[in-house]
Image (cartoon, rainbow, N blue to C red):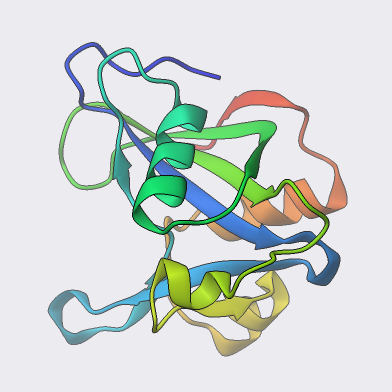
Length: 150
């Protein structure tokens, strides 16, 4: 997994999934009055890998159980106008299923979606590349390792 920028400009976007249902957990955002759905943005500490930053956030902030990070990592430029990269890291429970109500642990207003539901509803998803990234993950046509998404 990639190392963080030494100046702390990189972020990780942990994508919490329910593999058996092919769902991802998204949080509603309301920038300028337009609701869209997003994955959390977690600052990476200097020298920290994106996987470690995702686990740190989800274990210590959301109090989720033991987690597994997929070997597939997506890399994008930051979209908030700042320098650095953002990484998409797919996160699932170490056990077969989530043993706790993960939706309310991440955010009370979070919602489980499939990529097909998101496409049909024509809702804005951030980052925009998330749906293609997740379809590639679910269908296995993206190779393990870090891939550029922009």
